[in-house]
Image (cartoon, rainbow, N blue to C red; front, top):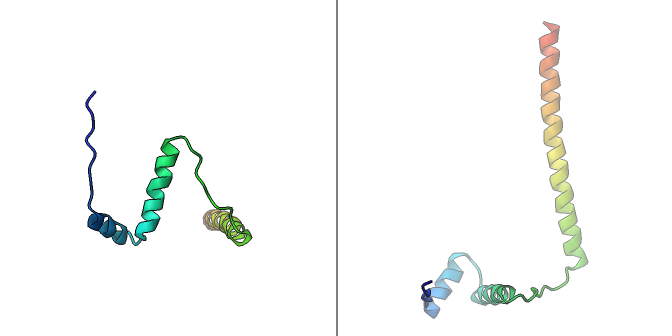
Length: 89
């Protein structure tokens, strides 16, 4: 098995990479640190969600479900209308 060489990046490159995806460098550093901790078997530290965040998440799920139901109803309506037109001829 060959040993993999580790790539090194300059601070300038890291800053440009963070700016390219519109993320603060400190946020990217935090992500890297969290990923390393996960690889070491440590559970990720996450702050508890605020009640507003929980409500937003639940409302987004509900919205997605309702939009899916609307699409199904549109398709059923179109199918019934086409059958109705075909039977009336």
